[in-house]
Amino acid sequence: MSLNLNNISRQDQSALLQSLKWIKENSPISEDGSRKLFFGIQYFLLKEIITRYTTCTSIPEGIHRRAISLAMQKWLINSVTDEDDALLSAFLRVLELEINQLKTDQQVFNVLMFLNVGENIHDLEPISILGDKLIIKTWNDLSTFRTEELWKEISLNYPSNPIFAFLGNKQRPRTWVFSPILLTAKSYVAEDAKSIAEDRFDILRAILNLSGLRESVTFYRSEPKQYSIFLPTPVLGLFDMKGNLVAPFRAVDKLDPDDYKKSPLKDTWLSSARRMLPLFEQEVKSSSIEHHILGVLRLYQQAIDLSSTESAFLGMWQVLESAVTFGSENISNQEIASRVCELVGLDPLFRNGLKLFTEMRNDYVHNGNFVQEGDDLLPTLKLIAENCIIRLISLVADFHTSQELRVYLQYYPLGDNELSRTMNVIAAIQKTRAAKSGYKPAG
Image (tube, rainbow, N blue to C red; front, side, top):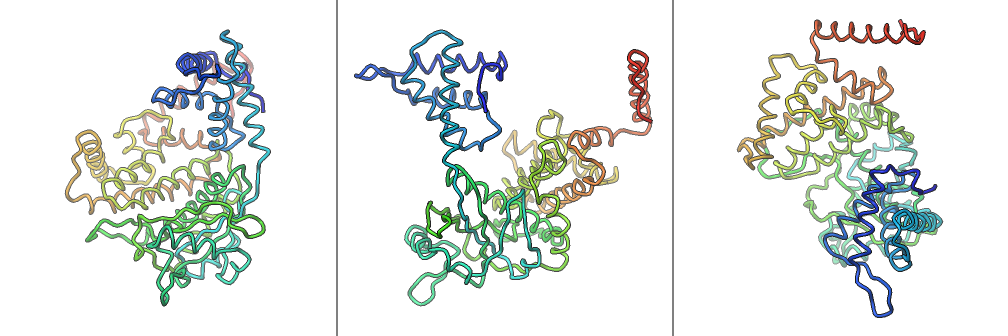
């Protein structure tokens, strides 16, 4: 990896240089003559600019951010030049050294998580998500890990954690509810190993929830409640290869312990999950349709984990938006609704219904008004989002890249006459190119 000015556009160089110069000029000088970083609002804003324009795709975001913080301190202490190119080059050299140093600290962690699922999840084994194996364990298998340290820490700091129940006078894990899941992650720091494990765990949950929730619709809830059947891990423990607890756990306290109930996988859910899991077994290219679907699945899982109806409504709308716009397109909500209708296959009669959802979304976002019947509207929007995801998955066989899928969604809503005119224009362009360069259009 090499960070140099040739890899950064002139516009980005200018933004970086202005940020670094401001930090240097506004950082106070200590008694020994060295400069110390000024930690104000401006610093944190400029740090985001520096992070954005020195992004390195070969390392996790967490490592890059840590390297930025370390590099800014060391660069400021040792900065002796005010010349623009030299000042920027000096910072990039320090940043590269910090990244390389952090990369040498790569370790292997065993990450232990817990899923409220029945024993028949073993029917899905082996489970691999983005190249990482998720191994379903029994509680007896955990004897190789010093889990007592984990239980002790949880009971002291999170006495109401949903993984626990009182057995006699002591708290013990609710072994009859949870299935332990183990993921081995190779990462630079414990925090990144935790992030990797949680992401794979959430992708698995999204696939299982998608399979189960499409079979049920709840139009009335007496109290705010998340839609997830399979909930976030209430405890996450990181262990070294010898079974020692090496990093703080993360516990979920926002969910009611009663929410955690064992959910067996129905045969239809298993069948659906078996069809989807192979799509994400290995790392996927950023240009692939599978990568696009993963992003939508992550948003879907976030939305159904929300108990607030208003937040879940916006989250589910974000699922629809992401499914048909690929994040970078700036199109109207009406166009989003049109693409969703075409993707799901809704007849024109039903498009006015989705138009109403669009108006409700806009009224809430811009005016803060959410309809009283919102709790009844959310299941409908959820069903539409789920059908969007299933439809995207069905298109994997026809399209290999997200760019192809983007073109499909752009042109599919066109009427036959407009589509024919578009084809004629494309044919004319190809004919002109063929005449100039000998290029022969396919077909």
